[in-house]
Amino acid sequence: MCGVLALAVRGRRALVRVDAGVLVLAVALVVCGYWLNHAGADEGVLTAQAATEIAHGRPVYGQPWPCCSTRPIPA
Image 1 (tube, rainbow, N blue to C red):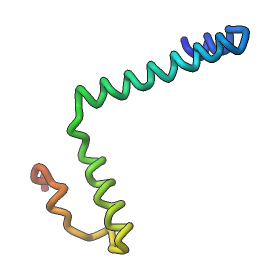
Image 2 (image 1 turned 90 degrees about the horizontal axis):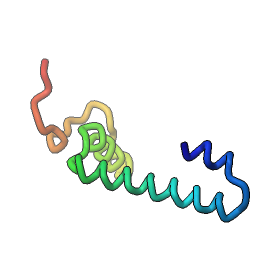
Image 3 (image 1 turned 90 degrees about the vertical axis):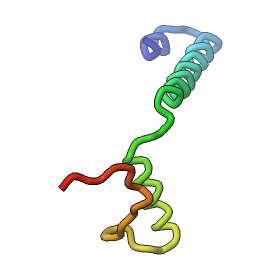
Image 4 (image 1 turned 180 degrees about the vertical axis):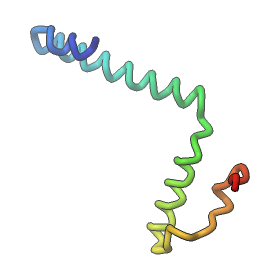
């Protein structure tokens, strides 16, 4: 709907309003998503740990990270 509005409106002021509306909608979706599930996912934890290891010059693959495991991995 916002894309159609961006193509349909005439004038700079109307386009600024559409852009502001899209920005407000995006911020609201991110805030509500964080509010409903602020714990994060396993992928996010592993990505953050891998980034830390790379930043410190340590290998990423083949390393145990027990700090990232919240439940046992099924065999």
